[in-house]
Amino acid sequence: MFGWFARRQPKAKASIGVVPYDWQPKRIVAVSYALARRDEVEWREFLARAEARAEFHRVKDFEPLRGEPERAGLDPDVHWWARVGNELWFLADRDWSGWPDPQPYALLVWDQAKKRLKQFGNFGLLPTAWTMPDA
Image (cartoon, rainbow, N blue to C red; front, top):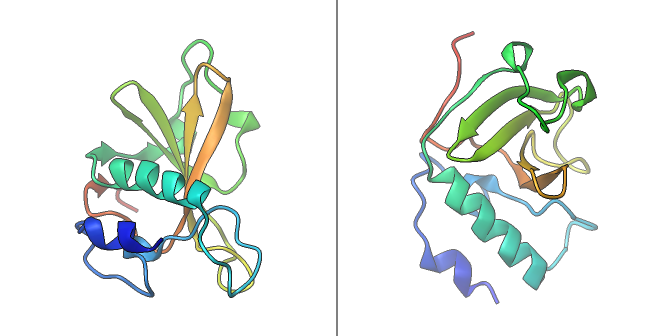
């Protein structure tokens, strides 16, 4: 079941724990949580996006296009956004993280067809292909 981790060699500068980017699925129920098939799909979706070039901007500069979520409706932990191809990404940076809470970052992608955000796990290391705004 864990063979899919070994098949890919992502470009992270470091890896804490077992998974590159210190990634965790969005649903973790216990410390000893065993990864399920749905987690493999989530991991593959995240990894494809982690390897894509993305230039993030501060969420205060976000101007939604027609059919996209309003800035006021976003989670308060969402601090950055990016348009990558035909997708709209939001990056959350939690004030709280570490056991029993999830990793500090979460990638949320706007699903235009379903009009909702889809989360692709939690992670502790930002991919090197992503550019963040200066402080």
